[in-house]
Each structure stands twice: as structure tokens, then as C-alpha cells.
Image (cartoon, rainbow over all chains, first blue to last red; front, side, top):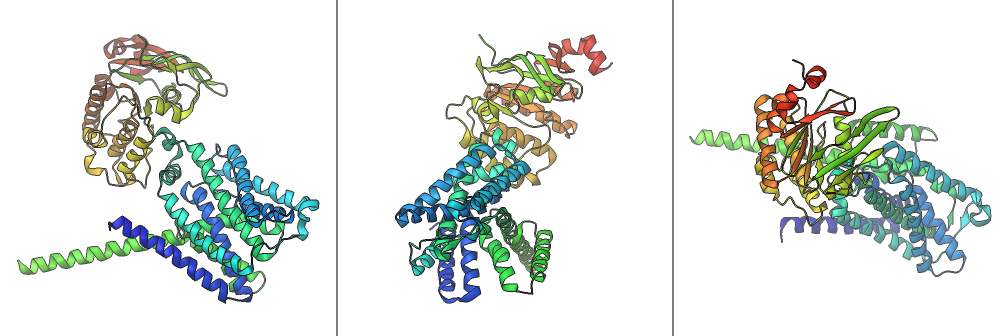
Length: 326
Length: 237
């Protein structure tokens, strides 16, 4: 086998192992820790979608929590109306992706802060609709969900979906589409002048991210049995954005690291009301200042530095030996 | 026979400012047109209109008699107009080779400028740095790398915005030779904007002078050098 084939094989094996570890944790952790584990895994699926737009293309989308909510609400409403679980889930994802197309058509031609503002307002609109359509969604009180999957199947689906989402990201990031997204992150104007259809690629990335978010939402609804608008506010969308930034833009494992930090850490730290948030906020500031490329980016830089030092030292040793021999 | 590239009455306004005001120029295949003028005369704006970076408020840009203006950067580059930028623009963390492979994959299959990546690199003296990140290249090499990236789109027309900026005399001379070779071997039409007359005048077949968004005069380098209006407004004695 060639070296890239070995590398890809190892990466995909690692992704499978992550899913297996996740499943093990889902089935063994109980209480608050179990709930946090589920949330981290669901956020990992959702933010892996966000990693296409924000990570690879460098576009700050703040609408990811809306897609997450879209999948949860649409699938739950369809189940309520007697649709089959598979149909409800698929339509939950597909209809949310249609929403992604609409947001993308409007905002894919905007740049930087305008894109962020546009997606932020889209998210605000979704939250307002969910909160105020009391006849359909039961408003802020939340909506009970018909459980179509057994609890054990839901856990299996969550674990499989984490692996599948990461594997899809790994593969897609290495396609021509992934390369085009990266070129947009590097310099969008130059990419357009080299022939990259930048607006179409950004639209496709946003639609793809909406699909990942929606599927995570479907699973959340099935796991919790009740959903409420407060789970999908634009504040949550902002935290998903923060998760990718802290994990490391465009890095495969950024969604896991980011979700652990943003969702897991505040729950598990438990320093008392208020204090936890301040501590976590300070930690985020430190991470941003010390490793602007996120945790994974920082680790990569550290690894490169160590490799260079090691190479320099071994070269020095070789030279000394050569000098000694001559 | 129509010109390779032609503009007819192109106007580009920014608010009340007429950055380009009723400009008509033409470029023949295999020729180099030098575009000169004082700062703010509209040279770069005209180049941006030609490249599809900006749409004109009036007038048209024709490539081989077909309108290309107002269609955006991607459509324009795929039609056959490649450009470089005044400030260095490369994918900083990518190698030059990777950038060029991306551009080559994006181009239309039927392109007139057929030259392998290796040939482009060797013609521009970039073969040794093709695997280095663009950000690590010297300023002069980055200017050449921008030309290589533009060439890899398979253009019929190459627009170079101040390609010699930041180069010393020897580097500018080498760049001039490289541009001549590109023009000859690919039979391209080339428009070069530059303030360095020692670089531009020996290179250009024709020169167009712009002032306040309008074409002041056009002609051979010798004619332009002798033009009193150009001497008064730009070249000086």
C-alpha cells in the first residue's frame, strides 16, 4: 500500500474507533455525565457540518443551531402527523436543507461580517417562529416528541452518525469541492480569478452544513423526547461557531474538541453558578490568545516544531560523527 | 478582423467620481500594450473592468467580438482573460504548484494557451520554488508566481497590474524578458500597467496614457514619449 493509502486507512480507522468509544460512553455514563456525553456527540455531528462553511471556507455562519432546530422540529411534527420514522427523519433533513438553500441563495454572495450578520438574523427569525407559532410548536413550553426509535437504537445511531459525519468530512475535504472551499478561505477574490465558482461553492457548503445540523436535530429530538426553542437560539449558533474556532478551523477533530470545551466543560466543571461561566470564558480567551488556530492547530504547530528540533539535533549528531571520522 | 480585446466607451463610476470615463482601447493578439498614467488616472479600475472584477456602468468589453463585461470574474477568466493584482495576492499557505493545479482544473477544456505547468514554471524561473508555500517566497518571486497562476488559467489576454513593483533593475529586466517570452510562445495579448518607464517602454508595442479616467493619447512608445501633453501631465522633461 502507498503512504497516502495507509494514512487514509489509519484516519478512517481512527474515526471508527471514536464512534466505538462514543458508543461505549453513551451506554455506560449515567445522569448528568451521560446527558453531557450525548450533547457533545450531537454537537459534534452538527458542528462537523459547520466545519465545511466556517472551517474550510472561512465563513462565519451563525445559523447552525437553526438547522439543528429545523431537523428536530420538522421530523417531530411529521411524526406527530403519523409519518413513518424514516420518512419523517429524511424529510426533516431534506426540508431543512431547502432552508439552507434559501439562506444560501440570499447570503452566499455576501462576505465576512455581512455573511455573519445575515446568518445571525436568519437564526433569529427561526427562533422567533419556533417561539411564536404556539399552535404548531407549543411555543417556549416545548413540544413533546413521538419516539419512533428505541432508546438503544437512538444511541447506536448517534455513535454511528458521529463516525459517519467525521468520515464524510474527511473524504469531502479531500475532493475538488474541499480544495475549492480552502481556496476561498485563502483568498476569495483570487479564487474567483482562477475560475472557482465561489458563490456556488459557498452555497453548497451551507446546504451541506444544514444537512449535518438537521440530522443531529432529528437525533436530539428522538433522544430527549421533548424539544424547545431555547435549545436552538442564535446564542447556541454562536457557541457552535465558537466551538469550531476553539477546536481548530477546518481540522477533522475540531468539532469534537470544540464541543467538549463549549458543551462538556461548563457542565462538568461545576464551580458554582456564575463562576463556571466566568472560568470557561477566561479559558476561551486564553485559548484564543495562545493558539489562534484552535487546539488542534496549536498541537499541529507544536508537533511541527518538535519534528524540526529533532531533525536539527539528529543532523547535528550526524555531522559530529562525520567530523570525528575524518 | 476584430481585435482580440476591445473596449467601447467603458465608464466606471464610484458615486460621483468617474474613475474610467468613456474609454475605448483595443489589443491585438501577440502584442503588449502598456497602460500608463498618474496615480488615480483609472488604470487599475480599467483593468478590473476588463478582468470582470467590476462591471462597467456603461460601455462594453469584447473578447474576440463577444461581450465579456458584467459577467463576473469567473466567467471572464474562463472566457480567456487572466489577471494579476497590484498588491501581491497568492494563496499564502499553499504552494505555488497547488494553486496552479487548482486553476488548471477550473479552466475550460478548449483553451488556446496550451503550455504545461512545468513549462510555465521554467519560463518564469519558478521551477525551484514550486513546492514552497507562497508566503515564503521573496517579493519578486511572488510577483512572478502571480503571473504563473494567471497563466495557468489558460488566458488569451493577460492583464498585469504593476508587475515590476518592488523589483530592482535586474529583476525588472528579467521579468520583462519573461513577459516577452510568454507573449511570443503563447501568442497572447498582454496589457501591462506600470509606473516604471525603464521597464515598460522597451517592453510595450503600443502605449496608452490615461489621465482623470480618460485616454489622453495612444501610440508607439516613441510617439508617446514625444507627446507634449503626456510630458506635461505625466512623464515630465
